[in-house]
Image (cartoon, rainbow, N blue to C red):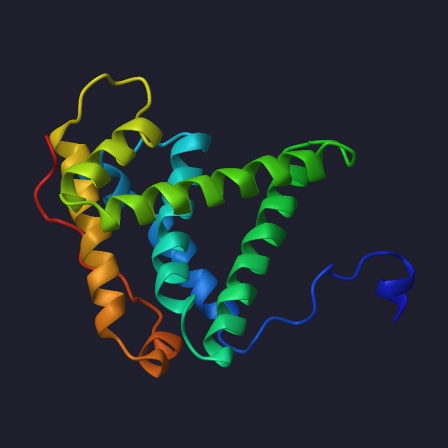
Length: 187
């Protein structure tokens, strides 16, 4: 109660039982140094954010059409993402009045990526479209689709397939629902 009176309580109600663990799995893979090395993701603020968004997408894509319980967990994972962004921005010294604007912008980026990835999945050539999406967003300074873009696109499509093959209980019980990271370094 004291926290609520002092404005220290979370904006969100307690997350569903599995949301914190699944968000932890998202963060763990999104920050995995092997992921950055194999797929040539820049180890910058933007690169780390893109990695986080890509893994959030994979989970959200699978859970969005699930049971009420699973959709509630998906919302809890997204709420944890927003709370994490809020805390990270504040730790970085972003002012109280600027934090909501930055969160709003980052949320729009998430939904923009979600739309672009959904379009790539539905395309006639999903691998090529996904590689183009990766090139535009993960490495926007490059003019061509690289082998690293293709490798990351293949990883994302493998993630969609792996999660689609898992039943809801297996996903909720998993701490590592991701496809394996390609062992060879992308060129």
